[in-house]
Image (cartoon, rainbow over all chains, first blue to last red):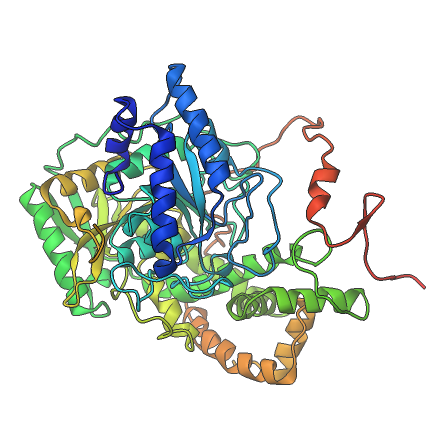
Length: 485
Length: 95
């Protein structure tokens, strides 16, 4: 059962080949047997999962099932789920049991999906390797000495290791797409505002967006159908008609115009990565697509802009952790100020503190215009580049990440090297555009390579259709990490 | 422009983060590496470019001025470090 896609598991449930209780128990057993190798999960709660599975089976018996009813889904530990420990990968929230559900969780619960467990992640989603977690690093199922990418590394590893058929994650600068690429699975970051941020623990609010991780583009569409939707409790949630994201899966790609930005294909990415990406573009040409060379001249400024804006927003969002209302409180302190300072110093890890310091500095008196406002102006230049490019093509393609998975510990001592991992994914977050990553080959060491696709605003259905057509013609997405039966 | 050790300590205080001398020194060089990276965007001519504060240019929604939340303070305070009579306890701040 664990090698099946969500789509075929849904068919199995519909045909009564197995029940949701059996399916959920199967995945719980796999996690219990195998996850000490990967550390993809922070929290399991089999009792709660099986209770939901039982309710899903009852929903089906009553004829009230929907597309995801009875499907167990792993949730990044950044989504608040009522009654579940929700840590965000931090010591700060090590004892935080959420009293409420995130909108996305509420939607999944309503659809009858089962919460399989909460997945490991970089602390407060700050990282590209899932190594900054207070609970220890996640390991890549393709090679356990390598990182799975991050920050949604636990979700990506769980799906890659067949510990979950699908997962949800968040993407602020690439945190869904980059781990999907490094772990050999599919991941989608929707247009900003399509998925509600309510109950999704905030990192950088103008960039954060939730999305699905799965093993096929079709499964991403099924998950997004449930995750997306207007929510008045998120002030940036977009009021739009509900969409069926599976509607273009069958649409041929003949005549599609693919933009290839020179900045994505210039030197920078590893030769093995470029070989796989070039071959994937060749496959699209075979399917009848046209390619056009385009340029995003300001793209190179994305990483610098991001490391002003994201820390600035984070320093403000993370001010709420004060050791008073919830979360960690230092055991000893002299007075109130000392309580704040010690609780935060002990509750946050190194990377989170570094970003709070950078953010506080760029927002402080005398530096605000030079850093924060300047970054916002350059952000607009980057967004304008995309608007120009989309006059000439339907989608953009390029690598998701400049390299395949790197060694655990390799980049932890050098923040800037770590940050440059996200050079190809950050631009879509800055512009608010949808982006996805699908497997498109392997490097010489057998590590997966991801192909990134960036679409115009609300282009998700079209992009998923394009990815699905590629997956009908190729089998990269069906490859299994070594040792996984 | 590079930050000094004093900048780091000042910012740590503003951010309410306890930091000792050794930690401040260690973080200083890493932060300065990041600011070297950030420096790349500072030379860009952005005269006449409107700052982009959000991914989509949307206006804030308004809603009716009515109560939508019910009182759940007991539930919410279950996770608090110290509570008494529904109040959060902190060290004495007024002498």
